[in-house]
Image (cartoon, rainbow, N blue to C red):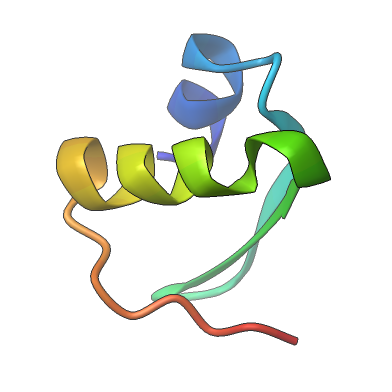
Length: 52
């Protein structure tokens, strides 16, 4: 999933990695944050982002 996201949307993602099973970290460019959140929801089924 992480590699697919980075390949499909390189203009939105600065870095993405798997932290542990069922947990990923995605660093997005500020100006594209909302668009990336919509993609994660619509294309990947994410509904609860965790901000840190």
